[in-house]
Length: 235
Image (cartoon, rainbow, N blue to C red; front, side, top):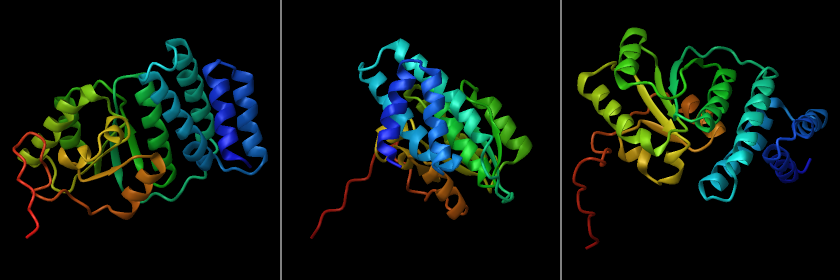
């Protein structure tokens, strides 16, 4: 199977709003043996990133963007029903994202794959106030607070949320994870705001959260909001 060709064909079908062609392309991948999890991570995610990038660069109309995100959301929902569910790993995730439909689409692919990998997910989408998030964290004590596919406008609240969690010790075991969206477009930002773990793609997120459940931010990691220490010079 030529995955790149599949991505290109699906992209064209999506931005045209061609539901029949999009479904036919997905059906082809299934008939050729592509598992639903691979379809999401290796086809849907690259198409999603292309749509998002072209729209932000004014290379795609609002109509094309809306066609693509709405139709891709349907395909993602359908694909997740074919996932082979893994055994529960005992880790509970409270997840949020940016405020737009496109943000929720990117986050949905991530939480669907995390759930398939054995994580227990509570996903609220975007537009949730920090005090509500903190209350939920304190009341339910999740293992992971995940903010994936966030928008630039979310950054002040995310930074404040991380600071508050650290200051009040909302939970000693909580791992704060970010990725996608604005974090993919600003190298080093996730580390600088004090996140414990980060990833750029849904499959990388699953691997990182599976392999590094104990990783926490170093005390001197956070640099956003304070004066950076001068870099050491070579002797």
